[in-house]
Image (cartoon, rainbow, N blue to C red):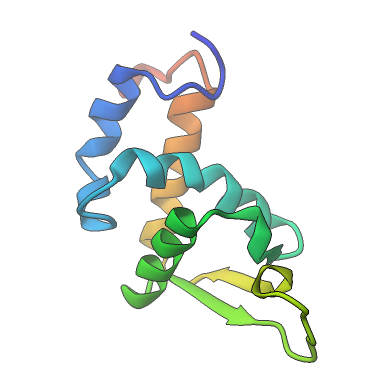
Length: 116
């Protein structure tokens, strides 16, 4: 198993809980989770240019569904829309749990006995 790879078996396990969070584009959400996790656990701030339009639309959807909070940092005078900085926070514990579970399944090779 290669670390960080979303294999078919991982996707099957995660697809059972993901539809509640994003009815379409499950794989795109799964690929965005490490970015969300890293950002939240560090400064919580990211630049708009770090995400493409599709990824930003997924973040917006998660905000609309109240899983995340996303706010524009104040005091910015950007030349372009891509210069904007946003603050992201996890709003719902269940979403945080899903994110940690996805990272666990994709990065940890050996499972605990009850997780086979």
